[in-house]
Length: 300
Image (cartoon, rainbow, N blue to C red):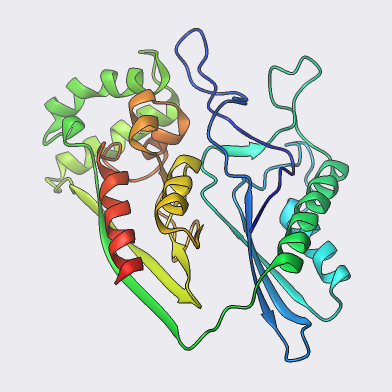
């Protein structure tokens, strides 16, 4: 493992009007690149697994070419440096982290170019190569894996049971996450979606089930999380488990997975339920409960 800043930043700036969004240099970011190198007997890498936490969203919205973004650029550099090696990228807890590409005033994000993603890929690849060259061999007697279903709970404070209760809580939901009582079209669609379900007398689920996975290789724990957890969560896992790294969006997609603090603050990462078929935000203790399950699985 080594620290590598390829040019990333937290995107949850606290704005004067109470909204959340924009570059936040003081926000949580995980600069660690984690590397597992699978070696041939003669010492050359057969495959390299590298893990880093950042949205691969470098290119500007008006560029329509298909691109593997910075992970693809890093993969090409690694495979060029180690001929005959296959490099594979996994993303970490990247829910609130993105490329640090700013406009001329340094206040807001700008769209990037192919040059930007190549530069970021080279910087990430250099960290991967440095980590691999400084790595120590790990004895691997066996490979272990655990896969468990976890019920991610929705916030009972925003639970509704009929059309009247949904109508009552809806303005507060909109204000909670965007600091305005003027709903967006997507939020109105979400409200009508659940209104229709309530008219059909369908039950409102208290949880949504997704898989959590832990793979153990030579003392290293690879933690598979089914959504886009924020950087704060990944840092907590590494602090507690040591030789571990997280793989986001594993075994299917859940949603953005905000920490308790992010849920309290609001903002986009906490409000993705408006764009999904979920009946509200996650419960404030969701992160704590998920981490307890992860630690139990990792230590078991």
